[in-house]
Length: 302
Image (tube, rainbow, N blue to C red):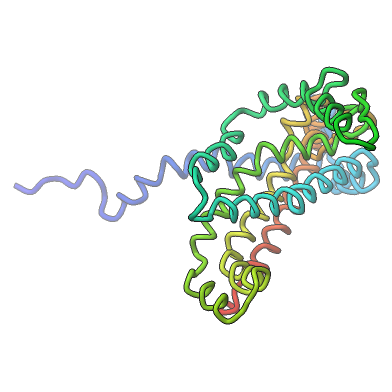
């Protein structure tokens, strides 16, 4: 007696992917499609909206607060790329030396900050940047006093009042430099020791070996790390929100694009304008991804 076929022939693969397809449609595809419609509306509450077409995007171009948030975000991104990543690469090269003792311990120490939560980091650096009793001001004060002829550091230095963006860059540096270091450590495993030894025998100095051997070998992962840092910087929200408040501190010096999106969408209730901000941010991230794809090409891909 033949058994009945419970599942039609060829339907099994679709049955297995059905849970993912359902979740993707409900929690990703539908919100994305609906956000496009919302970006064309102006909201006056959860149930009051007016169709304005592309006016939200035109208003964004004339919005000084949005331009300030965008400028602050790009400044933070520049700090991540041009300060944090070179230091991460330098740490990776230092900790990749086989003769260095305790390499595993040092790697753990530098990577450990990324394991703590952003709320903890914000609270900790709020105390570090505090006037009078803040650790950074006290250390700089004691250091300048110990150096003969150096001007004494002012313990009232207003990090979180007048130097918010440098404070944010320092806090993010402490948290993520070890995280990026791990990527560079993995990339350095692709550097051929035979090529380095041959170049050394031929008289190449350390800079030439780094420029012509190390950089080409780590280029794919390096471009990925740059993209990762840019995307993370453009999505910056929790650290400045907790460190200086939802307004971004004095004169909005710490206001980021995502903070401004949150304020317009969930504080003021204009979800249409917030959706337009979100799509502008998505286009910027898409541009970074396209740039990474072009820069990440190797000579064999061209």
